[in-house]
Length: 238
Image 1: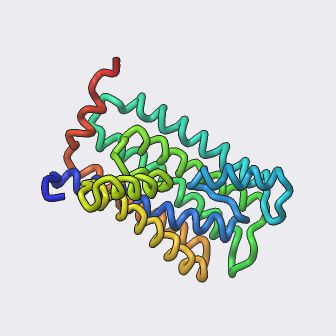
Image 2 (image 1 turned 60 degrees about the vertical axis):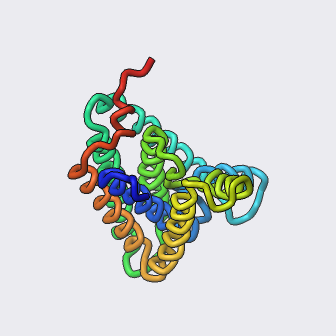
């Protein structure tokens, strides 16, 4: 940790923050949007299989909507990478996170408009919120995958947990990446817990908090320097 540059610390801090946002979003989608995930597509694909199998309380349409818009977000991330790939990569990240922020604010607006005074969402509004959040999270997934910082995927922790246990079994206590892995797990857990608390007030509050945190991550990308890891991403691909 001591060998990290200031820019690396800011980048990693942003990714931790976005991992927290993932916990918020999935808490909101699972509890308030009808047992669907809009950030974690692994769980969502499993839910889709359960729904086809006739498990009550799950919806093929909701899960398919989330998955479809997450795929669209990944395509959008690839397009943005091709457009901004030769510019400083922190600016590329800022643009990607700004789009996520915009989509989360859009989802919050839909929630505020169609859920006044705690009344249930109407069907079209619910699908609109699922689509907007899944699109934003899908774009984040594609962007962070391209960034490829080890152990900071911001959404999927299955391999993080497995790697944490595996590395400790080989060389207990000497794995240099364990702090990042534990940090990611704690941030996801904390986001899910806080998300449930925010849902006791409203889904709009949860989505608004998610958008504000994403906006903060956007701003800090603009004002930091590009890391060496990001500079390598701008090298010509052969």
